[in-house]
Image (cartoon, rainbow, N blue to C red; front, side, top):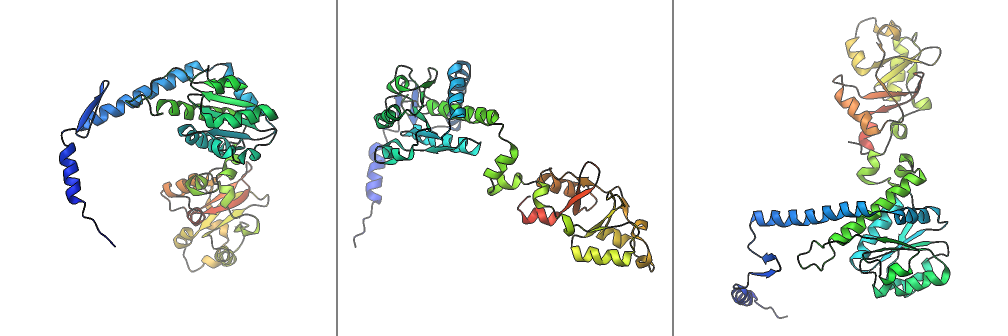
Length: 355
């Protein structure tokens, strides 16, 4: 095995290129000795260019966008998103956003499509193709496939006179723009606009489908986002698992039920099933007396307990338990008539990862 010491080579290269630490590209200097002010100025320039382009894109939207949404909404198949290079990376994100927000979508790489993946496209699918130039040769087979089998084609392009635009059923054309790259070559502003336009399509379709928060939750069960979507109803104990007793029950019996249910409290309900009070571990400590076990629970319970709706987020339930200042560890979920539907404990939230 051979080992090479490259330190001398590195020194020579550093010395040899030391005189060429910067060069000018138009009005922009590319330098290794940028000051913090230079770095911030560069960032501001990029963001100013892209934010202006986003405003131009918003102002340029017309009936073509409405047509694109209608085609995507009315398809009986799926949305197939495709694009090459940076457009392909953006396309993957657009497909993911569409699928996340209620529109079934997949990304198909145009290069792989030419080698068998065209078989993934069904007759009723709609194809959304991205290409800033509109001339990506890798899209040729896919465009021909759409025409041959009658698949609707939506082109997202930077040039209305491009091949992709001419071959598309609907054209989403970006406005004239300046790339933020100082060379004017790397896709920067153009990909930002494509990404934003994809988001606009996804959200418009979400609203047109009347896609609900509950449906969104079903598609996002994992991670922090999934935890934030959990409701009290998802975590609460209901039915026979609720610790409920009548007002005239002796404390000797109520404490047994309280211990069996292991939720640190019992709810007191009247003959109509309405929640009228609560008795907690804290109430037990405050009510200790020689004759406590002989008392009826109505004599020591807390009236008008704090409750919550079952459709409130579990995160909000946890927030309310933590911020009351009264050491509340459980909340009864009640209906509009104040009848208990379930009970949620702070430990239920923590076990589910809601924090």
